[in-house]
Image (cartoon, helix red, strand yellow):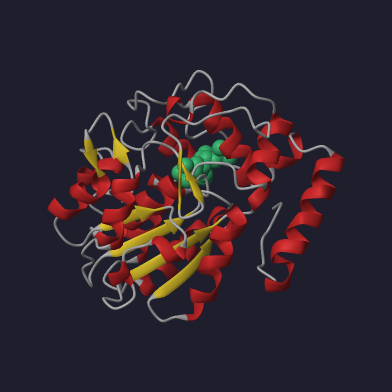
Length: 297
Ligand code: A3P
């Protein structure tokens, strides 16, 4: 049968029914399952392009009591390891970086619930699940596919990428499956679900709620305000420790990691028909869950 999609990710493989790029090779995904979790870990769970980097910086600063000097001394991707990612610059897998890291660790993963370390369920680390509306995620992912050699510098069209996204034929698999897998855990005491759009609208109050969830009640409002300011889109875009301008695989001239940072940019990309089709697909797949996504502010 002819292949449905012509784009091939560098080193792509299917693991447990999920498509991955070569930076999350099978041996790494095997090791993730038995990764040793610490009870004082903070684990950030996101689908790619949900605003992971934004929340990583916030969580790291909260867990380090607003250590801005520390945050300005080391790139965020070194301070907060990406568990299942084997980076060529660091020449190291995120889980090895994490093993060496001192507590409290802020660990990032894009894996669906069934694939995360087994110990996440008994060590009860604090888990932040960070969701963003899928239309903005898809547009952000399209631009990242185009700019990043990790994704093979995608040169296909937007309709082609949208079809790939809708079918889960992208790195880390289906957004729908990811979202469905984590949604039921939101009520557990060691879990907190946060929405990108809420953080965008009310950064101070959402960061304060996250601080309370993390038991960082020692942090005063001045520190929370400073964290919100440090983590604004404009500040993070110009900050070399957060903007990934030093990451060889990202061609910022095509599209930088901190691209627009908006709610509702999808409206400039989706046609009316594509939007109607997406809404229909969403209803079929996840409509019954009634997840309160926001598509515009
Ligand atoms: P856009 O492409 O829509 O601009 P991830 O970190 O998961 O790869 O997500 C990247 C997306 O998060 C990008 O979205 C990026 O601009 C956005 N983002 C990163 N930092 C942000 C911030 N401080 N405020 C708002 N959005 C941010």
